[in-house]
Image (cartoon, rainbow, N blue to C red; front, side, top):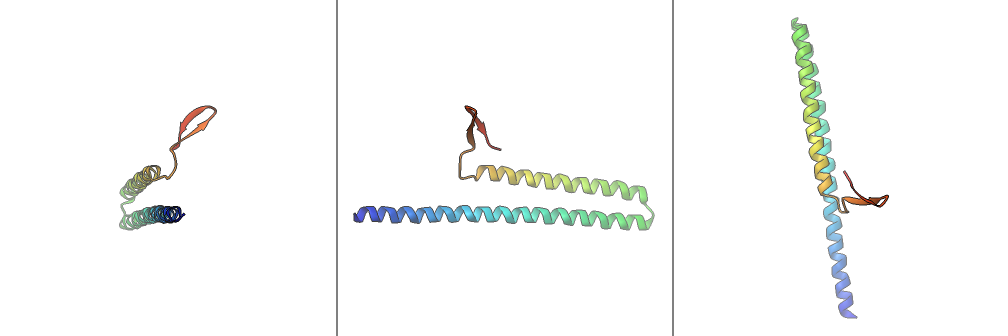
Length: 109
C-alpha cells in the first residue's frame, strides 16, 4: 500500500511538471506573436512617415515606389515570422499529428 502511494505521488509530481512546461511554452508563443505584430505595426508606421517626408520634399513618384517596397518587405517579414511560429506550434503539440477520418490517417497541419 505504501509503495502504491509513493508511486502515485511521484506520478502526480511529474504530471504537474509536464503541465507547467507546456503552459510556459504556450505563453512564450503568445509573447512571440505579440512581438511579431508590434514589429509589423512599427514597420508600417515607419513606411508611412518616410512616404510623408518624401511627398513633402516633392518626390511623389519615388515616395510611392519606396512606400510600396517598404510595405511589401514588412508583409514578407511578418509572413516569415508567422510561418516559423506555425512550424514551432506543430512540433510542440502534446498530441498526435495524425487522426483518423473515413478510415484514413490524415495529418494535422
